[in-house]
Image (cartoon, rainbow, N blue to C red; front, side, top):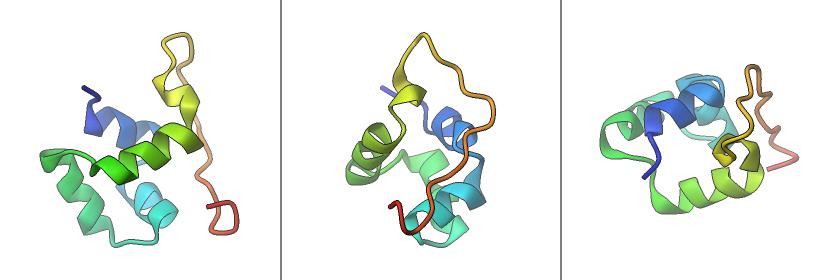
Length: 69
């Protein structure tokens, strides 16, 4: 199972992830406690596969723009 806090932090934090999905930061903040919803996690895995490879540890990942998403 993936740690939602680590994923959110690697993507730039709560506000950055909220911007990626076009939702309110409070919704993403809730994911830190309840887990990332499966459909959102699937998108993250496809859009940011480097977050899930053991060989890579990104330090400053730029969030996707609305046009790219």
